[in-house]
Image 1 (cartoon, one colour):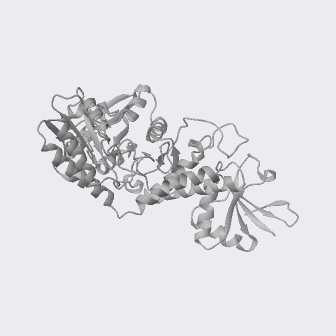
Image 2 (cartoon, rainbow over the protein chains, first blue to last red; image 1 turned 60 degrees about the horizontal axis):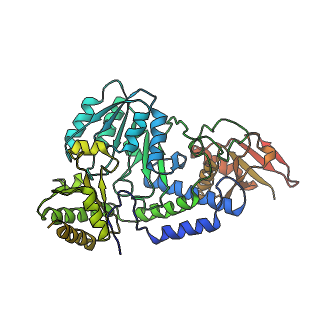
Image 3 (cartoon, helix red, strand yellow; image 1 turned 30 degrees about the vertical axis):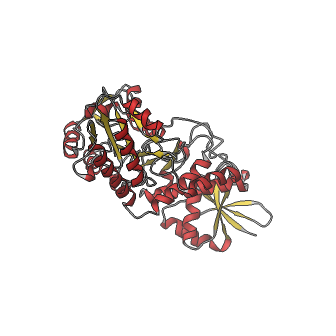
Length: 375
Length: 84
């Protein structure tokens, strides 16, 4: 049996209802909005139920502002290309993923970076405030670092943006389903998230939450099942951003995933993951030669942690854990900005990340394996 | 049976409309708009019974949902626009 500790990439264990919903959708559902027959209407009902569930869970006033995407990267591309024009100046945190920085680079943007040492939320907030100057067209920030689990002070950053009239895009890839992500509190232009991580949906699902009245720019054009006599894309959401047939089995699974997290006691998933993180920090730190990157204050770190092993390549450690049926991720984690901020860009790190389904026994197996690997 | 069809700008808008009416205890059903009344190609509407139209429009107005157009389907199957 595998000990899966790579939920920051994708949660492998899903609630059983997710799998059942995917299979049922494949057997019974067609294309939403593309027919009046029962299979099409069933697909339409499921798609709407998922929009409504996401709107309720993330405190979005209107389910039309919930747009389905392929993943968080797709959502981020839609958001970035809706707000930012080529060559404009954008302010980001020093913990962004390539899903943010590569689209900005492709647009030829001037990227300003608010950096801080790991887990110093007040320092990074001060940097955001200092760098949020007149020419900044947009601020983009990850809620939780996908490498180190650093929880960024996004409420305060959102407040600064609001005060200065700068659109704010939140990357909730590691926080959706774990930390509170409330559109009505954050007043973001867009919030982007995967469906296949903390929301426990299948791969190939993502969500873009759009702020009220937010201008949107299409990435894809095509059939929407609406205004078909016209050659321009509809100007209303979600149709404007959803050309082509939806991933209905994925959305059906995502609906069950959202129902699952919404059904947990508030904060319980975060609490569980933080407890496992603390256990891992304690166990790994006790092994000589292992450096664990952990926060002093528990609230500064979610269920993701990185470590390095003296005189060992991180990929070698990852492979050795893999041989012992322990799944982790090594390297740069598509986040060179984060590694630059933490000073780990040259060596990379081994990353361990948790989900609701991990147990204390999983952490014990990891610590035991690392004791064997690094004698 | 005579019924009214509230035409909406999109499927999702129609589904929102149906949900708001259902919460208010008014039976409604999302359906594709007939081609004959659909000048822009492919749209959706919400079907409500004759006796519920006035209440439905009031509830939708309170919820900030405005129908694009409303049609009545006569017993002979023809649709006629209702001027609001």
